[in-house]
Length: 304
Ligand code: AMP
Ligand code: MN
Ligand code: MN
Ligand code: MN
Image 1 (tube, rainbow, N blue to C red):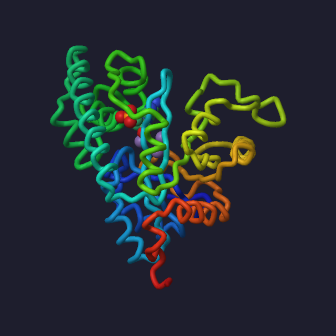
Image 2: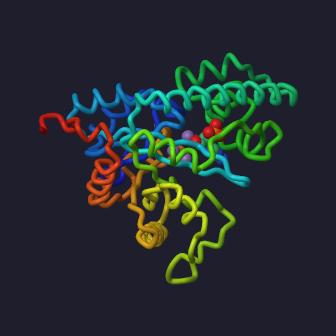
Image 3: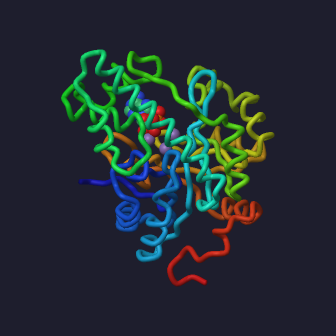
């Protein structure tokens, strides 16, 4: 497959520990083969892939940053909070994730019931088979719908059935953004707002003005302990990224970036985002400030 340029830093990726296609080991090995030098694994509501990814990263000699992506509730829309360098063995964290995973399973079952009531021949067993060990997400339900031929693409599954407000959409228990930020801080990680424009797609981002207008929501999260903003993301244009980088600076937040690679052809490719190299140093400095246990370890094979 012809590839466009691969940028060496990617801080937003998914594995089979959530809704990615590659196992944590495969993801890291693939990244190294593609020319990735610094990789973070940020599975949805799961730290289940971190140990495996970390050992593979040591094997192949790339820098690995442990991460997570927590889905949080807003009255309208969703807010995803990334957590970098967190202590993934923290009992508080693991207790919360068990609760979130249970709510995801329950919600998945209810979505399958709704789909069956609509005459779609999908089963909970199939969804579980598709999800494997990973966090159960709507991506898996979409995949199951594709497998039974109820839709032609996963995108269609969201449009017809399981997108927010769709006939088989079921909400679930979620943390608030403040709770997610507090949890990451408590576990010595660095909380970062993921793909900021998705929080409020209806907001006027002031693209006709030289700079973004003030954003009270961001101030609210900053007061709750947010430390960074994902300015460089997936298909964000260079202009949008520059505006978000400026916004981060105005709010005293660091910038991060990544592709949101899921191991499939539909989502952006690994290393497809130009993340400035200074992002990694800034993130590591903050993690040290947050007393991350990871900063006491060796990341790069052979480094001291
Ligand atoms: P969940 O966390 O269970 O609500 O599932 C959300 C996941 O579904 C996201 O992380 C995306 O990977 C995927 N997703 C959400 N909306 C869409 C969409 N419109 N088309 C394709 N995938 C989507
Ligand atoms: Mn996903
Ligand atoms: Mn996300
Ligand atoms: Mn993601």
